[in-house]
Image 1 (tube, rainbow, N blue to C red):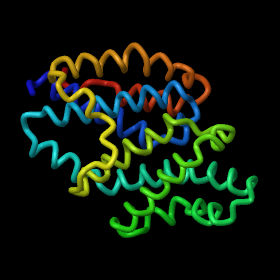
Image 2: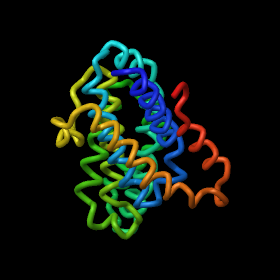
Image 3: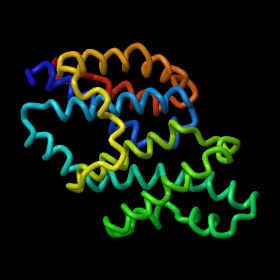
Image 4: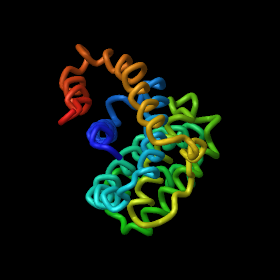
Length: 214
């Protein structure tokens, strides 16, 4: 990558990190979930095209614990909906499986964590029809899959869901342009709804969007 692309890549990473750290604020907005999934997919493609793969590995290595936290938070939110659905439908076994909190997930050893998150995703997909009435969307499950795949990648294991591979043949320059356009034409516009509703979150997003050294 050239210097300009490196600076833009740093900004993309900052936006992704900020959004992942604040999932509870924006995950209830379907449009943002959709755009965030697209953004994640394109970043996976960009990282796959990077000339300096060692630099990418260093970046991922520094974020392994943080990524596990993101996955745990997203799974916890969806488990709450799954648990509510199970309680109403009087599905005792499902209630037990959906009862895992953020701390229950996050404190597990990595291999056990992978097993539990995989089971959680399977349960969410199996009960998707019923969960729709509880505010769960397919995009939210895809968002969890994307984050889980990034954790697996950081953990040195192959991704399970490979959401992003449909764009594998797109060139690096085109990917940068597509990603920048996605931010400016879609995510930035939806984020304006937080300008007064959650000023701290909105200001944080704007700060992540700044390209340093451009």
